[in-house]
Amino acid sequence: MRGIRLGKRESAPRPTRRALTAARDRLHRVSSAGRVRGERSALAFVEGVGFAFLFDNFGTGLPFLWAAVCGRRDPRWPRHTHHDPGIGLAWHLKDVLPARRKVYYGKLLLGKPTLVALRDLPACVAWFRREAPAWHRMAYLSGRMSRAAHAILEALHAEHPLYTPDLRRAAGLAHPRETPAFERAIAELQQGLWAVKTEERYEPSFAYRWDLFEARYGRAAAAAERIAPAEALVQLAGRLLDALLWTTPRELTRLLRPAPGELEAALGRLEARGRLLRGIGVPGLSPKLLLSRRGVEMLDSRGGRR
Image (cartoon, rainbow, N blue to C red; front, side, top):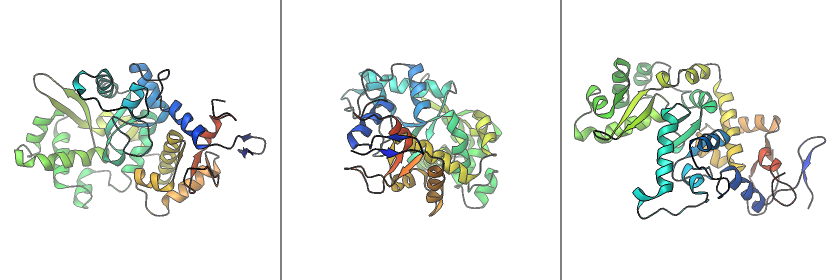
């Protein structure tokens, strides 16, 4: 089988679906030898892939922490979750790493709980807040923020951080009938990178603690101001491509929600930088395949590590 050309003097074996899957498994640590065993390996895992979900990947192909803890691609959900060591370790890690500001954790991609490497956080801010005014009151007045979300931010600007019961009272959302509105609003603020969960308190009663994103991740917020949205999309699409090793424009659109034409421009820039390979047919994969150069470089002619 003929190889593929990576540059004027570089070439690589033509990939197969089996070889790419094996490379993705290594990258996602879904093997007994490479699995996540504690805080250090969990941090290396997140930093290596950029983005990871927690207990499922929602059909995206992205890594998720629980699978990396189990060392299996599709672990079976246990009958008794409270006594399962894999569930327990994944839950502990998603608490302790953000609490120590080693990673970001919040509802981001697809509105699902997502672990994000700190190096990728500025691009996330530049992209996911690209259409929102910098001042939350203007975002509300312009119709880009709900009333409940605005009330929560007003409360946090007055005093932060706050645990959920105190935040709901301060925002005027304490009544039980306001619970759905509060939950929608706090998800909206996480997806927009306005507010962030900083702690899960278990005693004397369970509650989350919330803070302003800028207060928690000030460096990322400041760095985001120097990144144009178009470049942020290039960075995020490239990072996701390198985490997936292969994907399609449709899947990247699902994850990043770009406007028509924006993604194609970003893909063109990735291709020009040599990070994206297109037009390479791999039996069993989409004809619109986007192939990461990183993935190809992980292969040899036997489908293993180079």
